[in-house]
Length: 236
Image (cartoon, rainbow, N blue to C red; front, top):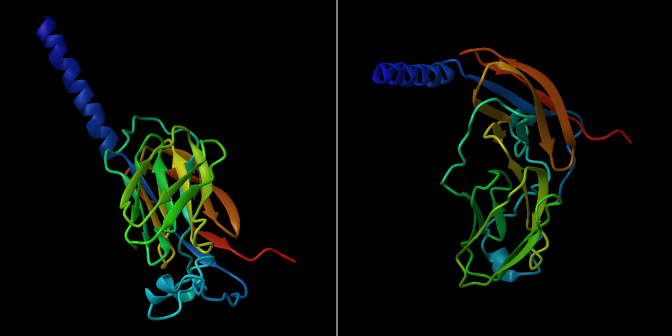
């Protein structure tokens, strides 16, 4: 009888996991910018001729990245609040690379407890100055011969600034999240959050200059839900 009950329990667990995966849903959407597009100056790297020499053409500002039709890149979209289920922290690190005297990517999400790997592909002196308010800030020197360094964050926290004190134009933004349900929009403005259990969620879109927006989204089994966002310059 014991073996029979064990087998039934194992089958029930397997069915539960399979059904959870089968009935997961997605949130997709497009981020757009409305209003007059500002004339943003290219990034000035004249202070470091080596940095400037790494680019054959002017480097566009990262403050507002637009695609055709004023779609917006570098917008972090995430599900706020608790999500039922267990979501193991990936063993693969999230990477921020210092390349061409810029941080790549410019906007990134990290799981609580996941490794953030910092790379120096430039062969120059950089530093990574992370300025979270919930987690512990750090200021990590990365000389030319230090190719990688690792960091971790132990608490959930919204988006915060990462900067280089050597090259003042170098900035990135990171968020630390308890669940894996976040996505950064591409230049085409599109994002996708996959694998959510059915339910109603608060979804937040964040932009470094234009703030945050939230909306409620209901996710049904095997049926994508849509959440589009539109950002505009603040009223004067």
